[in-house]
Length: 314
Image 1 (tube, rainbow, N blue to C red):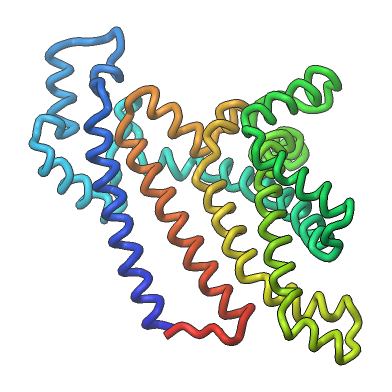
Image 2: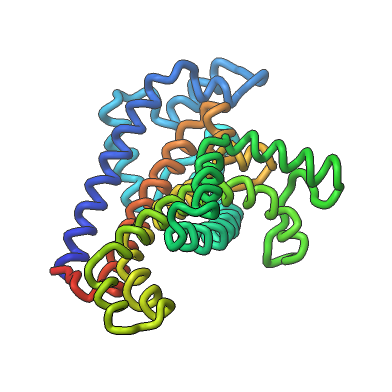
C-alpha cells in the first residue's frame, strides 16, 4: 500500500506540474494586459513600469515560468493584480462556501439517484423504469443556469419562499445558510442526481444479472438480502467512481451557478479573475481544481479495496 501511495504521489506531482505549465502558456495567449486592466483609470506610465517589474512580467517567459513553479512548490502562488492580496489566501477564503454548496448538492443528488436508480433497475421495463429514465435524461439535458433561473422565478418571484442570492456562512447562522443554499444546491444536485441515476441503474442491472445473484436467490435468500449483500455491494465500485468525479467537479467550482446566485465560492472567484485578467488568481484556482480531482481519484481508488476484497494495491 505504501508503495502504491508513493507512486500515486509522484504521478500527482507530474500532473500538477503539467497543469501549471499548460495554464501558464494558455494564459499568455489571452489578449489584454493584466496590469493595465488592474490600474483602470488610474493609469500612470511610471507606476505601470514599476508594477510590471514587480510582477516579473518584463522577464522572458521561461524565467517567469520557472519563478512561478518554484513559488508554487513552496505554497506561494503570487499576488492578485487587482488588489495585491495573496492568491493562496484568496482561494482558501472561498473554499468554505464552495465546499458547503458541493456537499449540499451531492446530498440532494444521492437522495434522488439511489432510490430512483435501484427501483428502476429492479422494475426494469415497467412504468416506473420508463419514468425514471426519461426524467434522468431530461435532467442531464437541462442547463444548470436555466434550471437556476426557473428556481428563482418559482421559489422567489412567485412564492416568495427563498432569497434569490447571497451567502451566510454555516458557522454563523445555519438556518440562514440553509435558506440561501437550497436553490443553488437544487440547481446543481438535480443535474448530478440525473447523471448518477443512470449509472446506478446500469450498475445495478449489470450486477443483478451475474451468476452470484442468481445463486444467492437459488439458495433461498430473501430478496432484500440479495440486493444488500450481493447486488449493491458489487455495483458500488462504478457508482463510487462517478460519485467521486461528481463531487470533485462540484468542489472545483460550479461557475455558472455561483455567478447566478452570487455565491462567493471558487467558481465565482475564477469568473471574476478571468474578466479582470487576473491571471495569477486563475492559475492558482486551476491548480487547486487539479489537486482536488487528483485527491478525489485517490480516495475513490482506496475505497475500492474497502468495498471489494478482491482488489489489492501494491
